[in-house]
Amino acid sequence: MNKKIHIYTDGSSKGNPGPGGYAIFIEVVGTSYRKVLSEGFRYTTNNRMELLAVIVGLEKITKTRQNIVVFTDSKYVVNTIQNNWIYKWKKNNFYKKKNVDLWIRFLDIFNQHFIVFQWIKGHDFHYINDYCDRLSVEASKRKNLKIDHVYEKYEKKKNIH
Image (tube, rainbow, N blue to C red):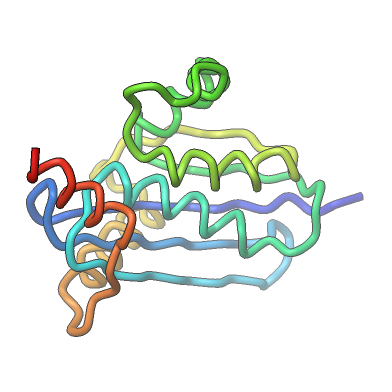
């Protein structure tokens, strides 16, 4: 029997778009295993960081077919999955949807596990969510932030027209 894995995620950006970051807290329930990750980007959006946090968290689970609960305060992520919008978007080739690169990446990993999404209210004194929030904001303030190449290319192209 697989252990249950909890993945807590949060994303942030200062300005939307602007510098952003994500944070992830992974635990294997019933064990002492914990992993914390965070990363910052120089120019991105809050929704991209929320979604990227989920993706990176899932990508860190190396064994397939795991029982995972993803805790996020992102209605953008939760509603897209729980309302099956993602499959409608895919069927329509993501026509006029944002963050297509990340949603495709998400689908590649999503079907490898048994995943339940649990929305939690942000800034509501949930200690792990608050921890991830602090880490994501700190990540967005680091020196030498990573470049979100897909987003920056999209923004540059959008502003040319």
